[in-house]
Amino acid sequence: MEIFTGSFTQQEPIPEAGIEAALRVLRHGRLHRYNTAGEEIAETALLEEEFAAFTGAKYCLAVASGGYALGAALRAIGIGPGDVVLTNAFTLAPVPGAIAAVGATPVFVETTEGLTIDLGDLAAKTKGAKALLLSHMRGHICDMDRLMAICNAAQLPVIEDCAHTMGASWRGTPSGRHGVFGCYSTQTYKHMNSGEGGLLVSDDPDLMAKAILLSGSYMLYPRHRAAPPPEAFEAVKYVTPNVSGRMDNLRAAILRPQLTDLPRQLSRWNALYRAVEAGLQSTPGLQLIDRPEGEDYVASSFQFLLPDWPADRVRSLLARAAARGVELKWFGAAEPQGFTSRHSSWRYAPAQDMPRTDRVLAGLIDMRLPLTFSIDDAAVIARILRQEVSAVFQGDDSAPASVPLAD
Ligand SMILES: *Cc1c(COP(=O)(O)O)cnc(C)c1O
Image (cartoon, rainbow, N blue to C red):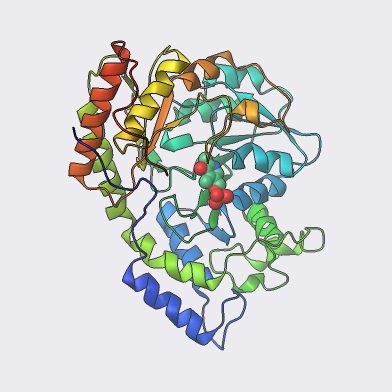
C-alpha cells in the first residue's frame, strides 16, 4: 500500500538572492523603512514600486500582515463602528476579524458549489451595507464583471482580499484590481513568504494617502515611491490616526527576489494542481470544483466536495487519508481546528443563517500543495485519495490501516 511521506506544511527555502539581500540589511542595520542613509532607497519602497508594477496599480503600500492590509483598507474608506460590511461566509478568520476590529458588523454572503460568493445573495444584501470585503478564498474567483456591476449599481465600494490570488486574474485583469483596494498577504503559507507581511494596492490617491498615514508614516511619506503626490496628504495628514503596521526592510529584502520569481512559481503550483485534478477525475462520490473560463487561477491548494456525505463518513476518510500520509482539512467540522474555522465559530459577529454555505462546507475538503511537492508526489496523493474516497463511499467504514500520523 502506497504511503505519502511529504510534509504539507513545508514551503521552499528563501531564494539565495533573498538571503543575501537580507544579510545586507542586517549588516547595515537600517531595518526601519524610514531609516535610510543619504540617497539610499529603502528595500520596502523598492518592493512597493515593483509590486505596483506587477499588478498594474498606481500605488502600493507594504504593511505588517495581510490582516493589517484589510483593516487599513476598511479604515481608509471610512468604515467604523456600527457599519455593516458584507463578506464571504466561506473565508478565513482574519477577514471577519478585520471588519470586527474597526467596530463594524460582518454580514455574510452565501457560497456557491464553485466556492465563490453567491451573487444572487450578494445582490439581495447590498441595501444598508457600507462596503463589500470580497475574499477570493482558496483562489476561487467569481464572475467579477457581474460582481462589479452589482456593487457599482448599489454604490458599494469593494475591497478585495487577495491572500490566495496574488498573481491570478479575471479576464486579464489582475486579482485585486477590480475594487478600490487589493489586499495581499506574504505570510509563510501564501504565494510569497516573509513570515508575516502584507501589501495593499490602489489607484485612488486620496485613499492611498490615508492608508499610508494610517500605517505609521509620520510625516516621512515623501520617501515612498509608489505613492500619491504630497498634495494628496495635505488634506488628511492632521486627521488620520497612526495605527502602526509598517513593513520593515528585512522582509522587503526577502520578498523582492521572490516577486521576480513569482511567474515561474505560479506555473509550478498550477502544474501540481492539474496533476491532482487529473488523478481525481470521475472518482465515485467526489465532486471536483469547476474552474470558470474567465479565471486565470493560481492553485496553491486543492479543494473538492463530498456532496451530502454523512459527517461520520467524512471523518472516516480524513483518518484513512491521514494514515497514508495525506493531510486533509475539513470545513464542515463543528469545532474550529488549526487554521480552519467557519462562520458559526466567529461569534463576535451576529449568528446568521447560511443554509447554502453550510451544505457546501459540510462536504468541503481542503489540502495544501506546497512547492516542495513534485508532480510525482501530486500523482501519489491523487492515487491515495482516489482509493480511500472510493472505499469509504462504497461503504467501507473500517478503521484506517495504521495509526494516523501526528502533524
Ligand atoms: C492569510 C489570509 C489572510 C490574512 O493574512 P495574514 O497575513 O495572515 O494576516 C486574509 N485572508 C485569507 C483568506 C487568508 O488566508
